[in-house]
Length: 221
Ligand code: DC
Image (cartoon, rainbow, N blue to C red; front, side, top):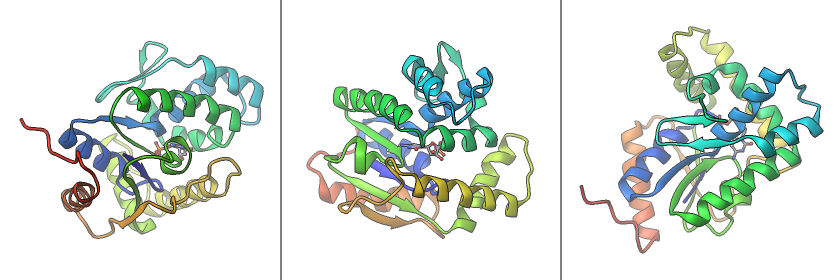
């Protein structure tokens, strides 16, 4: 199952919950780009240095656990959630060579197991044959409010306007890049989560998924 959409739309929460209920693996592809971006920043590699960034992307050993992401054996789950890493991930992910390396890994994971994979290009590029595709959206202000709550949980307290501006800038970059821009696949279900709780979104989409798939059964606990 593919879930795409802009930053703060609620993709991670939804993908994680659907995966748990369906007994699928949850794959956060944004975390992979964030891990490469973190490594690049630490190495002092500029975002225009495509050759070195490609080498990093090819050599990055990224493990996606249930709640734990490791880069070359180091737990980077917290470090990759910093706002500057979100911005850096958006920049490095615009490079075709970096995308190629990540997409290859994502396809390998998806071919080996049933997955709920979330990102920007899952339904369009990574798994165009996905059984169910969801494009999850919400108004920018609402997405900024959600992102602000995440940041506050990390002990950071930026102004809501600043968070909204960053989100809009990042979305603009993700939507207008030449390679695999963020867009809705023609056969994706468009769903606007503005004004809905995570619980509402989960129930509604699970209902849609069940209608569309033969094996949209819940896992018996
Ligand atoms: O989902 P996220 O906010 O963690 O993603 C961080 C950045 O990574 C996002 O701004 C664009 C990039 N990304 C991408 O280009 N393709 C994906 N499939 C996932 C993320």
